[in-house]
Amino acid sequence: MANRRDALGKGLGALISGMDGQVTSSPAPAPTHNPASICEIPVDKISANPYQPRSNFDEEALSELTESIRQLGIIQPITVRKIGLKYQIISGERRFKAASAAGLKTIPAYIKDTDDQGMLEMAIVENIQREDLDAIEVALSFQRLMDECSLTQESMADKVGKKRATVANYLRLLKLPAEIQVCIRDKKISMGHAKAILSLSDPMAQISLCDEIVKRNLSVRQAETKAQNILKKNEEKKETEEKKASSELPDSYYKVLEIVGRYFGNNISIKRSEQGKGSFTIQFSSDAEVESFLRAIENINN
Image (cartoon, rainbow, N blue to C red; front, side, top):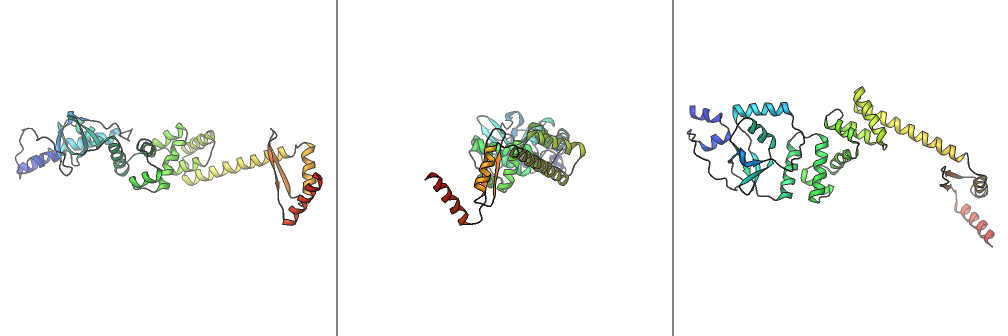
């Protein structure tokens, strides 16, 4: 019983290699490619995952994990693939970093055979489903899956087990200005806040609203109300400008309105920009009005 207790402090690998209570110092057998088995792999033969979707690791949480591994060993094996005589992490880089910091010489791991695309897919999907990635990291991961694995939003949604609308909402975050993406990454604003900001199309207005959310600690509902007010003011400003432009029309435009308006009960309006571009809009109440207007035009041509 004492030997089993001693083995616990040496991690999962010690339990596997010494089930009879005797832990030997002889080298571990060469790892096999049986995906159901766990192998002890030397830490110095493992390299980081080049497709790692996580760009930031919480140093405090990593330190706590390091201390836990130092006391209890690795509880959950990492997953790697074999490249030549070395191994590359597919998932479990945080555990690998902590194990290295704890001074472990070997680490328990599953070995999988996969190519670069398969490794990218597994790494990203595993992290999205099991790790606490921030929203921007998730969005970047989705974008990488689409770009590097030639996936559509629909097929990607199936792979990661999320609704297509959810995937689309994450991808929209990447259209926001960099300053706002940093606020999302640093958890100063939430996905709900970001959605309210995205209702505005002007980047400067987006940044301004984001700054106000952070400074005033606005709730999502307050941010949505603020965005709606901005949109309403912009629409009112646009209508005012259009009315102003239409009130300063050349005489020729008024003549068109008068002549054509006779046939449609004056239900004709015009929009014109300062550059002279615009449109006439005619509203008619019956086919007879249109036919009457057509006869008038035909008589002019004759």
